[in-house]
Amino acid sequence: MIEVSDVRVTFNKGTPLESTALRQLGLVVPQGQFLTIIGSNGAGKSTSLNVIAGLVRPDCGKVVVDGQNVTDWPIHRRSRLISRVFQDPKMGTCEDLTILENFALAHGRTQPRGFRFAIDKAIREQAAERLELLKLGLENRLNDKVGLLSGGQRQAVSLLMATTGETQVLLLDEHTAALDPKTAEFVMELTRDIVTQLKLTSVMVTHSMAQALHYGDRTVMFHRGRIIFDAQGEERSAMQVSDLLQLFKRDQGEELSDDALLLG
Amino acid sequence: MSLYELLGTVEVGLTFGLVALGAFITFRILDFPDLTVEGSFPLGAAVAAILIVNFGWNPWPATFAAAVAGFGAGFVTAFLNVRFNILHILSGILVSISLYSVNLRIMSGPNKPLLGAHTIFSAAQGWGIPAYILSPLLLVVIILAIKLLLDLFLHTGLGMNMRAAGANPAMAAANGVNVGRMKLLGLGMANALTALAGAMFAQSFGAADAYMGIGVVIIGLASVIVGMSILPVRTIAQATLACLFGAMLYRFAVAFSLNADFLGLKASDVQLVTAVLVVVTLVGQSSRSSMGKLLKRRSS
Image (cartoon, rainbow over all chains, first blue to last red; front, side):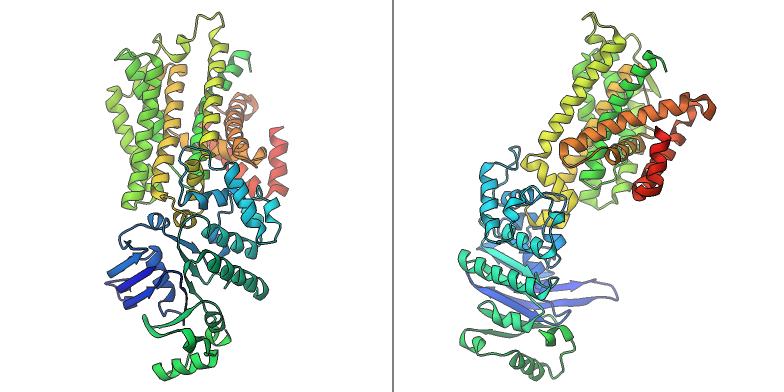
């Protein structure tokens, strides 16, 4: 469960570059819902994700995750409730550490190990077991440095790491944007399977309208720091990418200038 | 080089192995170029010397107290960086120059002789082994024990968090690691090791001196770079061993270049020799094919 209420974010406050990224944003994602967020560049979709994760502190407003007011919590503290997968495959994993060590790190998010050894038999077995799901043979490469893996493999590992432990909220920040179409689809299918299986409350930011409509239970569209469109259920399942585009035109009286959105 | 000189070089090389381990933690693990060591090395020497000579402490707890003081110095540097967002290099410079004054205060003067005082080396005497062999032997045991402890620490949950915090801070934070706290702990540890080296150096050298910290940061860094570019470093244990090896190799390189009459170098040229050595290694690392070969030919 995520509740964002009356959140306002201003970048470069008090300078000539001042810009408002989010205006009085209110968004409630119920337990177990898979929300997809779409919008053009600068619409505020990534900023809203960063507000939830704690990378951006709002000027005003409140963020509540799983019943806890996390508005003033630093990132590392929120990580006990929230896990993330980044857009850049290099960001989600630590390339100087081995696959197993990365896993142990993610494991420590909800169960810190302090002065005990980071890796024990249980963690090794758990990592191997989960990596087998990928069918990439990574369970036999536990002691390889993550830096040796391809972008797609790293992103798949990030996803497994993010869904290790007891967190109920998963944030996905265009996590397939840097991958080739085939790998992107593989990672997306994997995402859907895991989210469904673990009943996670998920928020996925994407540039692709098709992806936004195809995956998840609900879609919202951001424009200039506001939610201009919110669809779920039957209304959403009947929707096509062309409908979304028309809706956007009608509401805003302007053409979408972002090629990436159209191509999706 | 006589046997006596050789063992002396080994002794200094071992002592500076601790400085190298400290530099490994800051430069390699935390990616935090720490200049505090210029002040924490003489701080360790000063604290140990004053406690032994003026307060009559047993040399072992005095040496331990020096390490604690070093931890404090590193902690302050990290605190300036983490809490007040002061640039890491500047934080280190600020702390190391203030430590210069602090050290003068501690010793009530620019130096403190330890000649004839009870040291960790004299404490171990009387086992029938001559001092010039006993000192390096004692150091080997101490340094290897510390290396093993560091290896073990870096494999604990906390140690792995520290490695992640340095390698990928954003990812570490997203995985629940308090990156700021890891810097505080890591810099504290690194400077504790450096101060410990200072305390032991003062006891084997026979005096603590306010100026003995000059160039320590580059010696530590040189040891790490030289060691890690020569030995394989696939695991943590190999990496820390490479640092110790690098410190030893560095000492021998300096001793040889100062001893070689045809080069015409004097003891006062040591800082210049260090800088040149670091540059040659760095250039050799970046282009292994050309300069790397040159470096190997030179050192053989």
